[in-house]
Image (cartoon, rainbow, N blue to C red; front, side, top):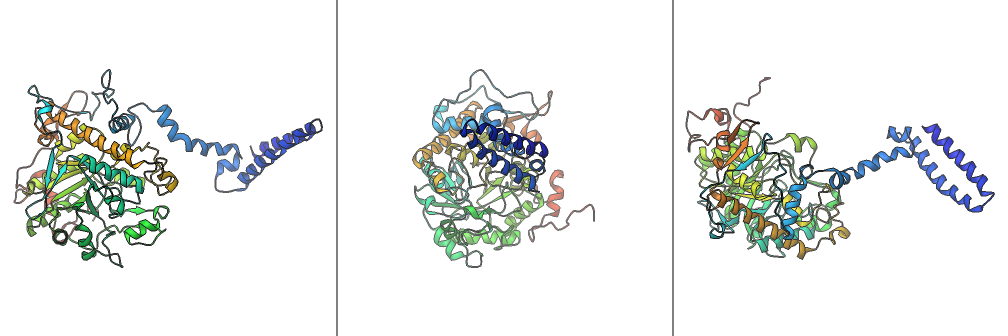
Length: 536
């Protein structure tokens, strides 16, 4: 092919020279011919790509097709049920509700209701009139030691940092939180002026980097924390142990996004990669973590304090429960993130194969809290793919009290699913620090869209609950949702995830399915007492 490329250019050059003798303008075509030959020559001489080396010039078409492939699939090829991580059906419902457009579906479902894994909620003959129910139910968060409990919405804005998001995106989300009366989780990047601009309720997330409350060495600073936690907008404090996108890894902010402003807020060096440690330095055991929770609660004036994690080794979470029982220091809430990944960019192996999926994790966490008699004092927040009211209600059925959504809120902001979040080239101005792209995101319009998506989704969740004969979505439990196992078998979620007896994890005999995890769990250290290794 290389020989053919050279011969073709040589013959074209000779032909143009001959033609130029009849008309001088033919000679001008020698310029683009020389350019294409130079590009092809470069392809032949480079050693990085075999295809370009063997097929000069035309081999570049492969990279061109790779570039346009995601867009061609999304707009020309995919059906409403195709597309990952979010299919068009769910993207469309978010867009429609955010814009206030018609969101009903004509001509029946497009989903295969006989496919394994299909789920539905059982309605009741004794359904309630939705107009008689509370259209905006609230969930009280705050245990026995909390002095400033907070009444949270069923649906809230999940953790996304300023830095990962643009300033206009943060502004719009907080404006939406203010209008919709829900909270806005800051993400581990700390509290910026943009989080405070519109006065929306905040959950301040504190990760392993302690951004916004760290000393010069990167360690936790209690005085700095107390100063910022005292702000009226800050309603709750969340300790981030891990996240579903990359459990076991700290958060990553690439140098291209680490501007001078972001570096000032995070107390780090500008224009460098900011990689949070994998683990906290303020505590190293479950018991130490409980004492850290008490410090945060006291220094914040008694505000609710909880933690976020993606469930990994089950015994480690049970160790946290044991520490709460032994110390008498309880978290006010636990945010459960699914191992499916989320807005954070991560290695493929971590997104695909590390961490427990959300629904299994919610059930596991609730079972543990029931087993240790902690459920009445601790609220469970599900953080994962919530695009429709059924997603919200299903999480509540599995054991959550309320939900956070990140990708749903990004779609409400105008995200077009271009999957450019980690490149600083987001075309909608949401996940970029490029001021030219950020300018395209109108804060006033997008803030209203976030609020509308929140309102309509919560309203639809209340509607589903009323159809199930319940007066509130909070009354949904595992017995209300059914899952198809195969073509012939269907099971309720309480059959697949049976509830344990209250207090059954506190004394022997432990429930058989949880016995190994309880026995190996320790409040003295995160790794289990008898580390199970079958190859030892």
